[in-house]
Length: 339
Image (tube, rainbow, N blue to C red; front, side, top):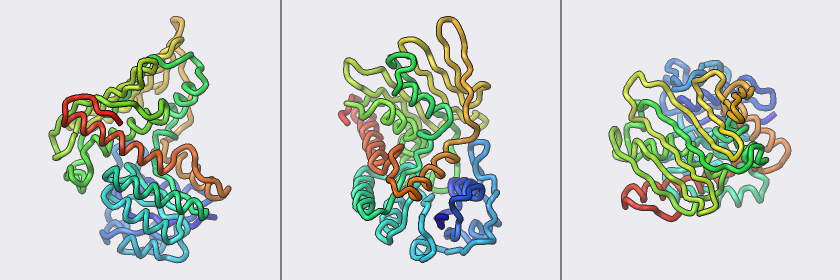
């Protein structure tokens, strides 16, 4: 059984704790937060998707640290799960790896490409010593999205001709999300999900052309990007933002046009994933739950088997930040930017 410590009991930390509470292959032995009310369970974070942060974990049964570095120094902790604000990811993940602990770190991997590259190098060195790490890029594990990836790889419906991804939500309105300098705007905090998924499905784009605007923070809060994969590649675009008016529902969608069929996913629809081909609509049965429920057991299994993760790596997370920074540069310059 892998002994886990979770740093920061906000929305994602609480979501991860809920998942650990259901697993037999891991046991949370310590948690950390600088807010005593969160640490005690008196204050609980809320999710922006149904199923997140349900408060299923009993926090009374674990050791509590008022600072993340104390948890990293906790000798019983074998895996450090980092759910801190983005600017702290590199510092704490690097410290945990150097302490010989396995590391899961929430998305995005780091605030800047430079920090992401430093962490990727540290992760590579740790892996050589049998210490594994993984970014929590949950869309690679999300039911329906993993199905799309498999359809692309297998060419189940021929080649992909075009793909569009859409992720829209209202602004969280609290904490570090109010600072563009800290969170990177929706461009880095929300849109990175789709940028990473595009990278997973189609590889690194040659260039990106992005348009976007600021509304809430000092960084890009709404973005539309075209990813260029060359004259023989698919036409791929993604839209993401958190500028929608209060009351607008969380929206997570994709439409992918293959040579022989069109796949359409809508998180809020029933069925969520549909295939249109030859005049027929086919509903695709999907596994229940969210990507978080699959990424954590996957990483635990990698640790138990002494095999580094391959579905998503720290290097993948660094490349996603690299693409995001190219998108930001494209918006500033008003032209395509090579990745």
